[in-house]
Amino acid sequence: MGKKIYEALNWASSFLKQHDRDENAGEYIMLHVLQAERAQMLARLHDRMTDEQAAKFERFVNIHADGVPVQHITGMEEFYGRTFIVNKDVLIPRPETEELVHYALEKIEGLESPAIADIGTGSGAIAVSMKSERPDADVYAVDLSKAALHTARQNAEKLGAAVQFFHGDLLEPLIKRHIKVDLLLSNPPYIPIHEKEKLSTIVVDHEPHMALFGGKDGLDLYRSLTEQLPFVLKEGGIAGVETGAGQTEAVAALFQKAYPEGSVQTMYDINGKDRMVFLHV
Image 1 (cartoon, helix red, strand yellow):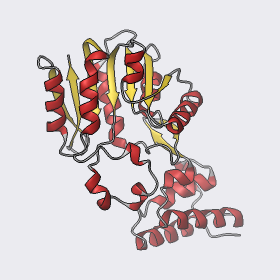
Image 2 (tube, one colour; image 1 turned 120 degrees about the horizontal axis):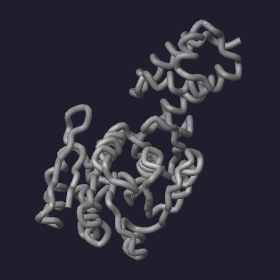
Image 3 (cartoon, rainbow, N blue to C red; image 1 turned 60 degrees about the vertical axis):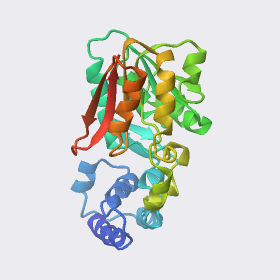
Image 4 (cartoon, rainbow, N blue to C red; image 1 turned 180 degrees about the vertical axis):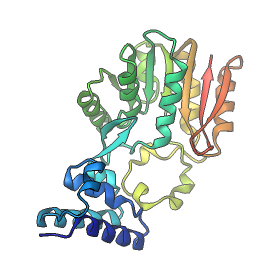
């Protein structure tokens, strides 16, 4: 028989720390190997793993130490209370993006049957969450990557969310179809290309660069979005975007330029960082 569960977790924590990885990652890997909930695992800490489980756990921990994201090992990530399929074709959903969804839902609380668009949908996390929380909404999701759309469709199907997916660049598929929305959301690529060297290899080597980098200053996609916005956003509509740290002022200025009479609001994440900009027109 293999090690006891707590022994394997202690080894993983120490091993990952030595390799400059998150020492808590071993717990997520263990949950995946045992196919258990956290409470179940904690109740079984003194149980012995089977040889097969022990070998699999050790192999996965070594793979993560080599730089592969835990989410690519388990094939999933939690987002807004749901489990999403993730892989090398999509950006791994981040907790900060859950806050974009939270604020967006608050802002359309009184609106009946809203039309919502998620631009650069990736795994479909935003679009599927919005449709799941607001079943009365018409939700559209766009991505330039066909591989990402394939994953997003899988997530929508798995989670029972009737989202309409379009392949294309930013708002072009919506403009072409004369679709107007009450709410437009996006978590576009916003990392300046020169910051590539500073990023963890876990991110740079395993997540799609198309979903990470936004040109020289990181703002290329915001410029394009705001130029196209008047063709898609209804009068009285709302647009909300996630930004990189320190970019909200520049993004807010782009929104204000596109809509001089609009109201622009910067929102802060749970850590007090300015991470979102909302436009009310």
